[in-house]
Image (cartoon, rainbow, N blue to C red; front, side, top):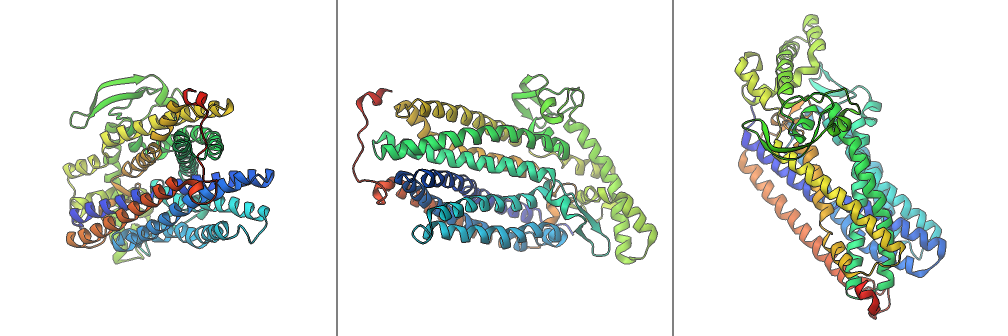
Amino acid sequence: MIVDPDVVGLSRLQFALTALYHFLFVPLTLGLAFMLAIMESVYVMTRREVWKRMTQFWGVLFGINFAMGVATGVTMEFQFGTNWAYYSHYVGDIFGAPLAIEGMMAFFLESTLVGIFFFGWDRITPLKHMLATWFMALATSLSALWILIANAWMQNPVGAAFNAQTMRMEVTSFKEVFFNPVAQSKFVHTVSAGYTMGAMFVLSISAWYLLRGRNVDFAKRSMTVAASFGLAASLSVVVLGDESGYTVSENQKMKMAAIEAMWETEPAPASFTLVGLPDVKERTTHGAIRVPWIMGLIGTRSVDEPISGIAQLVDDAKGRIADGIKAYDAMLVLRENRNDAQAAAILAAHDKDMGYALLLKRFMDDPRKATPEDIQKAADSTIPNVPVLFWSFRVMVACGLYFIGLFAYAFWLASKRRLQGRRFLKVALWSLPLPWVAAELGWIVAEYGRQPWAIEGVLPTALGASSLTPGQVWISLGGFVLFYTALAVIDGYLMVKFARKGPDGLGLWPKRPDAIPAHAQTA
């Protein structure tokens, strides 16, 4: 059965918007949790009250963000049943396991420790409270790990196989699912991005206090922690992002080719396109500025291995579609007679390509009747939106390099005790939105770049949607947008309100403006 393309498109839009909303909160939770642990550790070691007050104040903002992340995350998961029913049926045994573990183990642990963080200050010793804060920070990352294991399986479906008896995908090795190389690289890259976001959040708000001469000692200490932590995190993002790029070139060659707008296979080592204007119709990149060798080193870790271009990958897809039709035919035979040994043997020989045959279901009911023109159309559909991926990736990388420079300069100023230079403080303040821009663009590259696959090479997105009407999806889409927008507005309002109050307004710091020395105004 061919699902209404409007339903598929609307369902994709709904999930994309809710995921992007949710991802506004998750990285900040990851980053702030570790900064709280660092600040409280200094308090326990020094017993200086300022560090306890710092932990408590930034903890208030962490709590607001954590609550919003929970609210958006729980409702988002309902869509697997409402909007993506066939997806849940076909791969739920595999995809659902990490999500269940995340909920039962990591999320409940994280929530319990969050409660201890807020209500345990006067109930347990400082050392025990500090340990609870560290475990809370680790639990937030553990929660992200299981989510990313599930997501990585969509990018690189290892440790699973099609079961002709149940007509579903099933786990063959949970060890392979857990140690999926894509999961490991995505996890370290994503949490590092979250740490960078948390550091920028603290750096920017502290800069705002210093510009207004409020809470000076408090803000300078916060900025020092943010500069140190942010420099380490931003360097990690770039280094670990390189590893993530390598896994993409190994497992998602079309995504890598689209990110680079590499229309034809280049001789090794491939060059990196710094900027250019990808032309989808002509399949060329106008005005491309290329840096020799770089892409070959990033994508293959060598100087003698080529990176496949889009044209070659489309040709490869045509061959896999033709091969997958054999598996699809055998699967239908087994559906009628599950004891047919010949069909079982054919399916076993070609089941790795059956997902490619399913690409034809977007255009026809029976892939076995496909003409060469139909196969060409299905193969062309494996090309994602090249201009979106090309520019999203480059803006994301530019933000990452900017963060390194900003945090390095902040770290140098902190070491010289010169954090009150107004020019720097204004730059730090206005840099606040950039981590969110980079994080959302990274998510677009990862998820939009996987299209047309819900599960890479296994299940096309067009087949995963539920049997709904466009009107039904419009209603749920509108409801989710209104609900998530309301939460985002509430989160923004509360964050701004409590940031403006500051530690002095919350009774965590003396209610008097700390004057900035005259010489510091021009530092």
